[in-house]
Length: 308
Image 1 (cartoon, rainbow, N blue to C red):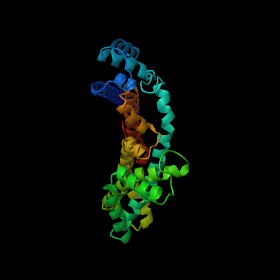
Image 2: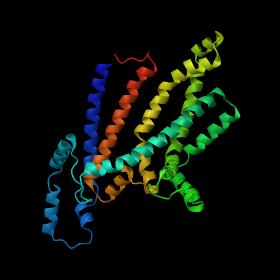
Image 3: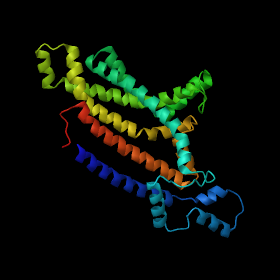
Image 4: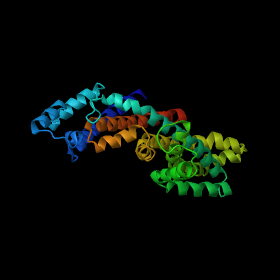
């Protein structure tokens, strides 16, 4: 296990390094000058423009800019924001992290609480009314883009009925619509996947053997079917959790949510390189770490899994 973890950590470092190169290169090849966007319509001489670029290190060759940024980022220093008047990038991001983290946490817990029991019960009661209803709802939810669902929820519950806030974080009610919008697709995918894996496991010979020996059905489902179906389900949960930020970006824009996703979009439009690079690099690190934790968790779910 130890050698496997060390090997995966080494591979993860290489992945993060390659991602940092792609992020940095992509941002600097994107059309637009952050200094020009920062100054707006103000009349500034070419000499002053050069001084501003020199202040932010934008006059240096791109390779040198990358080495300086990567070296500082390795030490936890992501520089200062160009668009936000020199505010530390790490402070700017950390200020938004709690809002995004809580939103994602609530949405993902909601999705798991709904999806796992629904998928299990749907598989156990195959071809029942509940099974048909759950499968139909899951397919419907999977086909809805989360931004469209968010807009429809806003129109119905905020504009027409006036029950819930329309934007920002005003109270606990502000979390309801964004959480539903984020949780819907994840719950649908997890429900379908859980049902599929449960049905697949129920057809295995060891399940038939347990039933032929007179083992109670609830024990067959709990001790055999669920336990063996758990590994692919945990894999999917880890995968969806790692990439949940991609959906959060859209939802935060729809609900004007003061989170990291909205900060990322605003920074892209303002060509605030350092903020965009910091957020995307941290997101890549989260994906790598979650995938590693998911792999390691297999040994706790199923003792037969070893990484020796």
